[in-house]
Length: 549
Ligand SMILES: Cc1cc2nc3c(=O)[nH]c(=O)nc-3n(C[C@H](O)[C@H](O)[C@H](O)COP(=O)(O)OP(=O)(O)OC[C@H]3O[C@@H](n4cnc5c(N)ncnc54)[C@H](O)[C@@H]3O)c2cc1C
Image 1 (spheres, protein in one colour):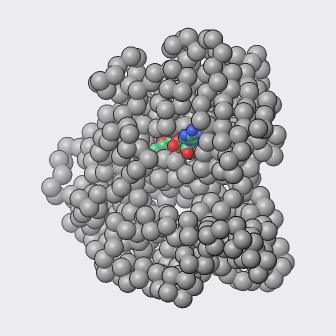
Image 2 (image 1 turned 90 degrees about the vertical axis):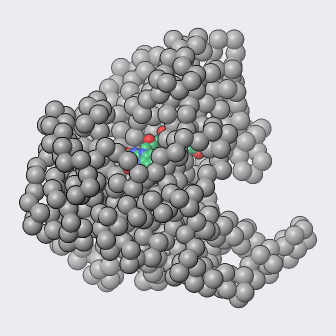
Image 3 (image 1 turned 180 degrees about the horizontal axis):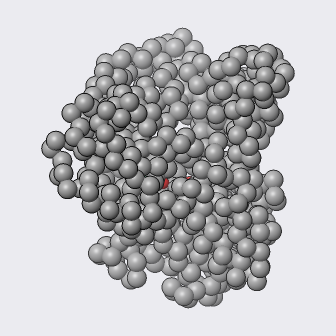
């Protein structure tokens, strides 16, 4: 058994938990974050990646709208390498309530969101693929945000300032001593028991927070709401396109890196189902048919995959029926809520309010620990976002490497591109052609970005996220694990299977046409040609043989 001691234990490595780790580290508070899977593998990695302007909330929820626009401005400064400042349009179709346009405009003015009416001619100039049947259009400062880069950058900064993180380590229970939570008991993926003791434990485990509380007899009630999204093969739009109506299914198309995504549905699900999410056929139909109303070209593109995430809607007060649930930020000091000292739950909110949620939580932590240092996360850029690297003079530093490789690496890692693209043969060889990932970038990720397997690598570098969905890059990536990270051959083959199975989950709901042909081809390569599953040894002797081979 391994034992650690610290001031603060953070459960959950989503945007909120990683934001708290960074905030604590910047204030000199010792903290350890425990994540059962990988950074950003929960809801943080399963959303649209919309950097809200706040306009989607401006009619009904002015508080959320104001929070969004204020964080939108901060994040554009501190996280510029995770953000595309695309702008957004709200478009009204003939069938939509025409009065919503004016209501939205008034709401935006009240929430201080820049919002202007644009002529249809200008709207088509901004977004040529837009449905030509729209009747009105508003422009707002929406953008897109890459949740994987954002969460990882928070961890990198925290660790560089003394924070610690344990990924692939699950918190099994809180440790309670009378009226105080004094630590957590964990199990890592190698079967090692770990106990961590700290003055304060923060439950930032999103929708799983109810379960964490239950291990210490603390009752909070969450009402999970599933949202599904569909990714299409091309980046069919360059700005965020919203339907100008009350938020509803299939009303947004968000561009992201090399693809676009259509979102989202909203379905209440039983709490027991939060780990077994599937995208239903009817959700895909709704998303595609409503998406086409915004951008008709969607009907001509291939659907790459579908996925879903869960919003934890939390019952405030002691409401167990779910009448008083909120989509806003919920911060619970359990000392006041149910007498459990040293324990805080933070949940709800949005990806893009993660920094604010972290600040609110760390303010309570600092008060409890009598730390006077104020929050500075809104002032200090994240690693990679220190300076914008699109100055042509700087790029000539890399004139021995192709512009597209430089551009993609810089797009993903910002100023850290200088640490990645060293003058080394590794940077000439592409591992993933769809996303222009080099062996040098993979090496950087394995050594610096807390990557334990190929699925983690996908989140840090986009290996396998492009049109081929890992068909041609995943086995090369597996090879690099053996070469760079000294992973045994058998272990690398298991990683490869896990990666392909994870991809399969996303592809299965959309298996028709070209996607079906592509997956048949993938199956043919990995099972037919490589005999992948059969190559894994079943007992230890075989394993040794393989490792020695
Ligand atoms: C369909 C959908 C679309 C959305 N779109 C947007 C959007 O476009 N823009 C936006 O700003 N917001 C969006 N959101 C909201 C946003 O995704 C979430 O508010 C945010 O990601 C929550 O982050 P979190 O860190 O609080 O939770 P999570 O990301 O869920 O993190 C919790 C972490 O805790 C870990 N964990 C759980 N149990 C344990 C345990 N026992 N031990 C250790 N670790 C554990 C999990 O593995 C997980 O990584 C969307 C949400 C949904 C569902």
